[in-house]
Image 1 (cartoon, rainbow, N blue to C red):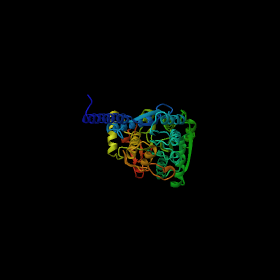
Image 2: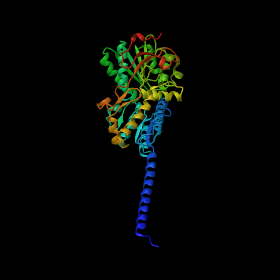
Image 3: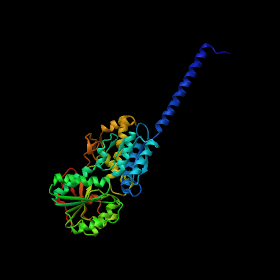
Image 4: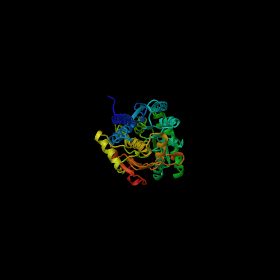
Length: 415
């Protein structure tokens, strides 16, 4: 029996509806598959020696906390975020290879996490070549900023900020002769020269010199013994661990600094590292230190949430690198959200317009050239003095609060 005209029309309508419904279902499934695909972000860290493994660990802690918070809130653009880690060992060649792999093989949309300047300088060349956004968490060298690469953003600390802090303290103490001991890297030499230049401006009568040493060295007596024979008013320590710990111990063992004659200013900010007291003990008592976190520094609501999550998962005290790692990832996600895209140009444009309330302040990126380029200029810092052994950061003497001048009355000279 042939179908009537009405039946034929009904069958065609039903078929049409079925195909439309099937297309909708298939389209929805395809969308779900695409939506479920993670947004991949690369992370380069020193996770093994000779790099600063402690710094890498602290940054990774912050990144992990931020990642969980982001994904618990649904990710970004309806997609989860995934971090892909590469170990650089703090070696520039490995950092360059890591960035290349993350971009060309892993397909990341951005890179973050670096914490050593020589590695950062190597990695940004790759990010610039492939035009991939790069959030520099903690590589301080001003050379990274001075490159003027539009892909590179710097929410962490920078050498000029540290050099200014050191120069201010040395000038306020009215010291006449200062010697810096720097690791023979872009970070160490660059910072030593910046301190020299800023001291000329703020304390023209001060005699300043610096010595460079191998960061893989273990015996620094050849540079320490001449200082014992002719002690300066202050020694500025510009090495990262493990060399920093060896240097601090040997300065103490030789009676050079801290002493009644010579201040020791630790400018690499290592006093908040988890293994600091395990490695230095009596050698640090009386030392001054540059710090990027102290409990008296105000934490914003996001910072308090990150701090709570960190302390729930570890017994270690809060530290600045953990906050810096978290902020770096949050900034990438905020850029993707603002751009509505993971395309490099859209993300870069969004980052350039950033005015985002982070863990410790409102982050904006300067468009001035030189060391200020795409840098958060108002990174908060403090100066602390160690007054006893095994002293946690929150018990160290705060001698210069954030945005305030040094208070010499709070200082205690070593005996």
